[in-house]
Length: 481
Ligand code: KIV
Ligand code: ZN
Image (cartoon, rainbow, N blue to C red; front, side, top):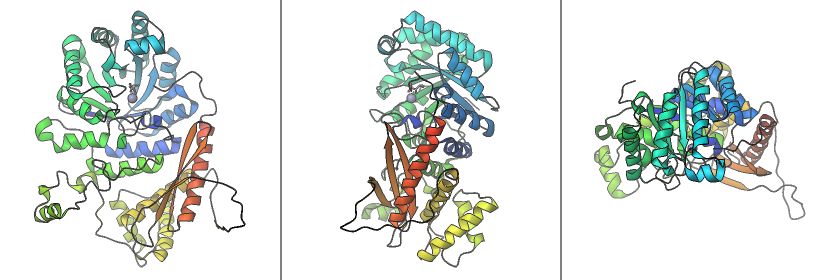
């Protein structure tokens, strides 16, 4: 790792999950963590161990299996949180405890109801406690961008003295303007005398749509870790979108002069997986991963592209792993052809899974003339859902009847969209069911939209059950950061 390498810290499984309605089960989190490892992120924040048994289990499961990236657990500056974080991280190849504590007067006064000295003591003693367990300790001064600068400098200096190895500067409420954020980072470096002993990190929220811009400017000012979520998932308007930061660094390395450890060809697959699991669709005009990101519609642009791609394209679709659409499978395609195409799409299947996929493929190919990459993605998503639902209910058959004398027995709200094109297209349905104040997302796909709806409804119910089970004994009084 050189001083020109920027570490990518992914918090999709922690801050991303805080997006309303984006709850994930432990098997789903593990699957995302495996893909994040393929993507090459440096740190995965797997959860907030002390917040619930479900989060504890997710951190612990990921810590035991994922070997390459550092695995972090979030922790409030409370002794029990630090202890739980460390317990959940047992078995990790590279554990990190991430202690956070608010530093702004607004938070101190209205939320913590403590004075500056008390909060300073909590920060120092809890970083020291974490250090007693773990060499790698990150400290986040929550709401740093609205904190009185002298107090922030003093707090950062003090936690570094007791062993913090990464100092994170969050723009918690997405309030900063890039130029202002740059000044804050510059001032931290000139006023915190021991800051050169640690990795300087930023964590930007997107309330004003500036999360990525603030992260990039922070890199220019010397930050060497950026935190964010895939697809910009996260609390309120979300966190900075990691794929945008990564491709910004990659595409403009001439200007920024830094690089990452990321395999950018895994971006597309990671983005689709997160969208599929959380049920948060990707807007078509989303930078880097939106459906239209590499589509050229106007005549002048098409003319330019046909003559020379660089006229209107600053990134190659292949550089993010965008699947080419040249090879189309059909009824006569065999197992080897299917396996080769799935491999190219990034699905490396064991024999059993391949058998199952082939079965699904044959059924689909009977209904559809051509099976495209998007069809295969839908098929793999359905197969994944079937695996994670195997402990709950599965659907064998569905029949829908309606008429003017029938009384409906259930009402659901549906978002229906077609994944693939044509009259035999695969339709994808997203359903949200609400229980209490929690929303659970279910997705299903099929050539018949009603069957897809039934699958989605069942998927939502199964996820509700799995998450309720995991969160049964919720630790009280632990609000999300
Ligand atoms: O936004 C924030 O400040 C956070 C911290 C816990 C890092 O998510
Ligand atoms: Zn955050």
